[in-house]
Image (cartoon, rainbow, N blue to C red; front, side):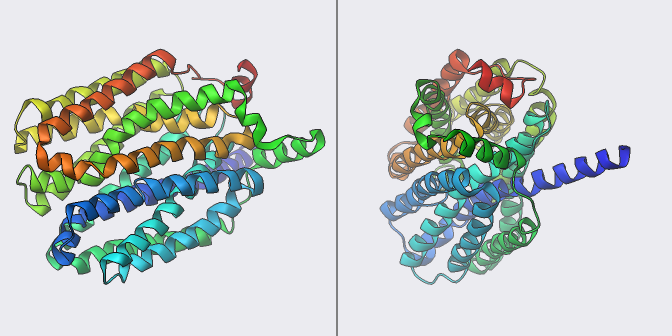
Length: 416
């Protein structure tokens, strides 16, 4: 009996890890593009407007949003595993397109394909994790996805730092490792079983003549999506700007070297990973989730205020990175993943996550068009706008965040 329990636990963790690696690819794709942005600008003589287009259409924004809507619905209809497998192949092809890109238009095509794939992978990954997490450990398992979300950029940035002397060749090597990882995931997921929770929910739905997505438009679900979109969306306007444009901003506004700007962003993700491991994964299943969210958000607010109050010197940049990254480890990003899985029934989970994620990423895409322009006209203005986004997210979470610690998915749905 004990051996059977250990085998089940090992399988559960393996499946969680395989599902969570999609987050490594998601964030790694964003930061790989960000880390090479200055190189592309120099090599192809890209205009400010073109830089904004790349930020708007890629894995950070619009294409990811479209992919999330499509992928989320397909996951609920046909199963998480099937969509995850097909999507990793699509992602690998898109990343290889960037590896061999030789003109600006090829960057646009590659960014769109990668964005679609990353968007579709997120609801598949998050739903698999929530479906298979043991009771009382959903926060812990969701936290693992966030660890990989931070680890992907950390690895990408460390690699970019050491490969920086190789110029564009180094960038192509970084992209190639993400393509190879996607192929590895395809092979590993081909041996995984489908979510038992999803299979059971589908059998029950067929018996009862389930009405499909119409259920999603009930007020209780619409209210949950509205909360998630506003809380996470305002935070993500800050995070998306930080994730994609930070090396660019440090290099152009703060006069940091390309290598130093990449190193700062690597430190940011490492700090965030440590925060997730030692705070979110340890306490989110046991302590007041709303209070944790507010505490993490306020730490990020303090860090971002530094950019508006002081010149972007190295000590200011360092303080900003440490404070905002530590706070992010137990605020909007991990709690969005957790709550977006908990607040919807199994056969609507991926669809609702996909729609919520899409609205957030597409909104970020339109915002990305203006970030380079704001940076060029006055960085202090941009800094205070970003601070305002974080404050708005904090207030929304403080008022409407749920208290689901220690509850099963079925109990949460019954209470709703």
